Amino acid sequence: MKIQEVYEEVEKMTDKYFCVSYEMNRHNIGEIEIICDIYIKNFGHFSAPTFENALLKAKEEMGKIKSDILDIDG
Image 1: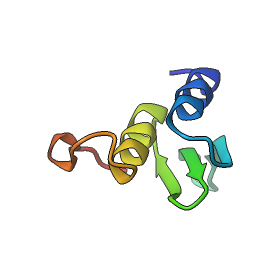
Image 2 (image 1 turned 180 degrees about the vertical axis):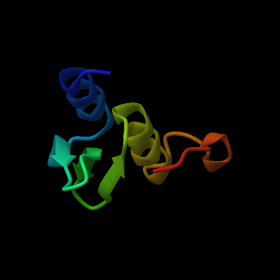
Image 3 (image 1 turned 180 degrees about the horizontal axis):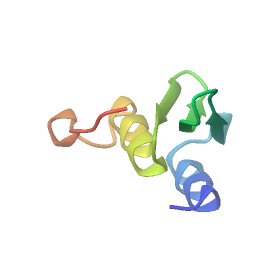
Image 4 (image 1 turned 45 degrees about the horizontal axis):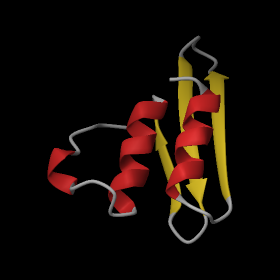
């Protein structure tokens, strides 16, 4: 999922301030950490290794989906 697609999806979910960000961090040992983050005012940050999972977390918190279908890590 592209960052612009996530932005558009979150835009449909809320009229509050929000931010979509992507970080790619290389650690000393050569390990790469990917953080896909969605922040929505009054709901908080939702981070995961993929935007799909971060979006699922945000939707669950906002009551857009039932928590029993949410089975993700990260």
